[in-house]
View 1 (cartoon, one colour):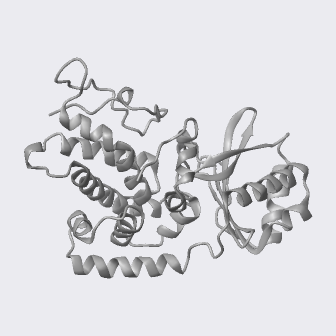
View 2: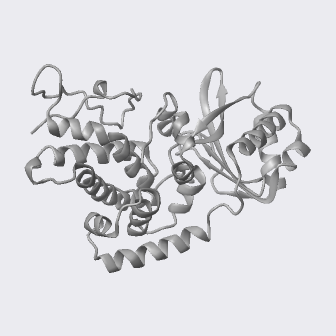
View 3: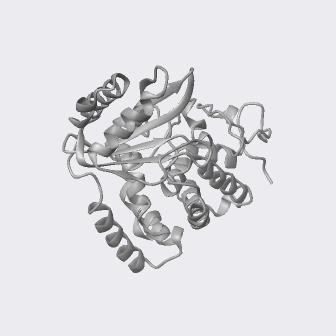
Amino acid sequence: MREAPSRANRQEQPVKSEREHTWDATVRRTDERRPDPATEAFVAHRNLLFTVAYEMLGSAADAEDALQETWLRWADVDLGTVRDPRAYLVRITTRQALSRLRALGRRKESYVGTWLPEPLLTTPDVAEDVELADSVSMAMLLVMETLTPNERAVFVLREVFALEYEEIADAVGRSQAAVRQIAHRARSHVAARRPRGTVSPAETREVLDAFGRAVETGDLQGLLDILAPDAVLMGDGGGVKQAVPRPVVGADKVARLLIGGLGKVTAPSFRPAQVNAWPALLLRLDGTLDTVMAVRMDDGLITGLYAVRNPEKLSHMRQETTLRR
């Protein structure tokens, strides 16, 4: 069996977390310059495979685990029987992600507090792909959380990666007719829940700047001016950091909670960042990243605030992650 490809052989160098597979084994090479065909194909498609797994799971750590399992299975494949390595690898990754997605659902039932997707510090080029950026936004990942595992897999493969129904059917183990029905159901479900009005990254950035200033200065009215009446604040501390135990609903409640809570913090500092391909704010305390604040906007106002504080979910905020379609 071939050993897993080292991150040293890829362009990006993600920071390792305890839960990640670091893939530090030496790459088996056919000569001094080039990895063997299986390794070469895997590395060529790795960013795509990670994106597939991450969109299905909402967890970078679990996506890394799915890719490790994908590699182990790919390493045993007779490449002479493979017509399309990309399609074959996507199929393996989808099956691994589906298995993990079902297990993840069980883990969420015992998760302390609200579970939010794991934020990623993304490269600038991801935002240039509008469809990809929309699909990995925190708001869309939360919408996809409401789908069944099969619906989520079919939606991601069809709507984001534009796979043919035949390929999707092979990946999820269902007939093409069933996949078409699942795709229709998933599209309808997502359409009813996705952000209502189109907001550009520039508009989002402007509102976030106003949000940061209002919170830092304790400007309650300034905060109310950019929050929708039905705004929701969700926090994920994972039982390690303090966070709101359940969603807080209503602009007044959200604004007063933020102003009151951060008013107790000495010199809170919000800094802009590109998180999941969209503008977001990073709260640092004493120079250490404490909270990633992502938003959902509808018709120019903030309707959702997602504060991720669980330290286990912040490891991919240290260095940019490359996503691909």
